[in-house]
Length: 224
Image (cartoon, rainbow, N blue to C red):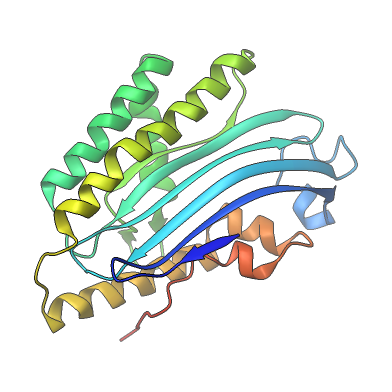
């Protein structure tokens, strides 16, 4: 686990993990193939969450992982959560993700975008967490090489698109009202990650470092 703090990145955390063991009964009921493996599992992944100092720069999340029980599959995705959305940023983000998905297989972008919109939704608020991206899980097409190459492509695509958004917005003047919107949006982010996020739930069900699976929490947030 690594956390960076700076004038641009208020808090950005990156976790690289390889964990294994035996799941609880509750965990076994939620993970494909876990009952057949008597709860034994192995999981590897990289996860990144960035909370920005300037409210004009969107929060971002990216996760790529491989899970193995009696089955093996890939999962992951990336999404933007702006407090102050810009159509240019949203469009660029989705355009490059569309290209990565279409390189994998035709129709993948529409499927994974819809999955992201459904997954990153707060039912109790009746609102989306952000402006979306892509999300996929239980990815096992039968061609492991092709699936893993797609996973790598998503990671490289993220590195291609997010830094220019940060560079474009990091010096934009902001007001106290802008910061108020950011802190409120962070509150929504916390609600989603603690209540609905599959990765956070998995962390709670394993003997993992809580500072690692809770690294997505922002340093400041508010509820009104």
